[in-house]
Image 1 (tube, rainbow, N blue to C red):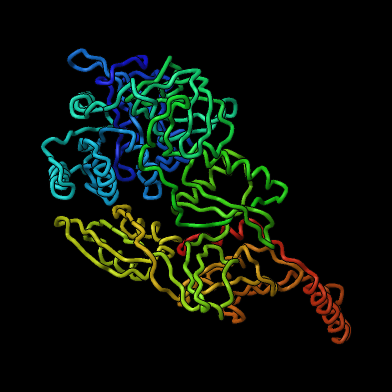
Image 2: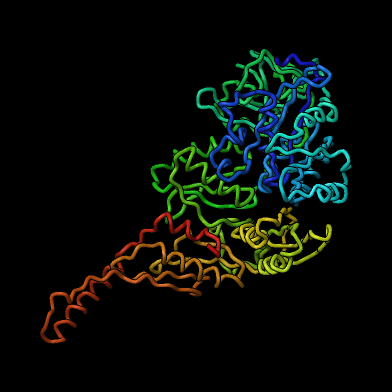
Length: 604
């Protein structure tokens, strides 16, 4: 079907849900029913193009696909489907996808019911005035409880459960009815093909041969080969080389019209010109104003990346530029460390986002990299009346200059089966959480609301929550603001020298515990030398934890098979002097695994 489809026969929709409720599986069934790809070439999670997505069973990059569909009344429709991620770190991806649609399929797992992110994604869809079609998935499972799922849709979501569709994405049951519901219940897009071009960039990716491929949703006007376009946020202009639609692969068409979803290629080599959420218009006949909702994403977790070999710095820089194009949320600037040389200070949306970036740099760009311990952004009030925002321990000023410190807090929402309530409350209290609300959603499920410091969630909160609740508890959070805290800079000393890349900003009362853990882990990772190596944790000049890596010793007494004890003592004293001299000039090499060990969670 070409892009000449009339606007009344276009439907733009997305699927929103909590993690692991079956979005990607349902997308697979929709694509299979439309015969967009031959069965012999089909594989599960067809829209999840990254290895890491397949391995973890999560969606990280939102993908788009145009599905042709002939309805029961014989009319031909063009269904533009945008797949969205479900993890809390990728809310911005979801909001971009939602703003390019008129309707959403809200997926609820029949075995788990309404979860924390089902609610937050529903509110996001409501903000954009989307038509919401509730869908209950996994009805074929033995543990499926359809009446309970319907009751939760009524009570928790405030939607009409009688209009909810029952499907099994795995088996493809009732998918035909779902297609009909999309056509009947989701409204066609508004907009005029005669108006000047106004299109939203909702995603983009980089092609080594063709440059940046921009993913667009057209609200007004048309885009075709040869026209000159302008990006409204930066004013850059380019000539369109080709336009087309997503049919799993890129399918070139003559033009894209208002209401449609597709891509444009314009030989864009300057990666920074394309910004997700920006508006594209006709350079010769621009639209009056840009689309609303464009914003710079604010990172909440910060970490530094360094190449293992300092000669790879330029290569790492190029890799980050290309990666930023695929991931609008990645923020970075130049950084340097005495221990690791030149690198980059990066901002992430959360810990999963950090892990994903690390794995993508290693796999897609073959980069050997070291990450420093993650940190959040602290606000310091100085005694001279000044204010300082820091996320890097190396920027921490002298203690005597600081009057008080504040750290970011979150409103954490945990939905859990009642049987795990006690253990989850203990975990939240351990993480300095203060309970503000507790609601029984029904006789089996409880919603807990906590005020917690964001820094406490960074290291192992999500993993421990999942293991305590056997995977049933769900977690969502919003950043609420800053509150006063007791902050300290923890330095790690190797052989008496501070290693700046291992420094961390920590809550003072937990500094000893953290220092001891780091010292123990480093002892297990640093290879033994010919001399003793003390590994110490310090706040200022005060040592608060210490471990020692024992020396490798040559048996100098092996040749003494008899004789006076003074002969043996003389040899041992000579060895001792040699070790002392070596300790003064000896250097301790830190392996990459030592940095990774510091990042591991406490219960690993």
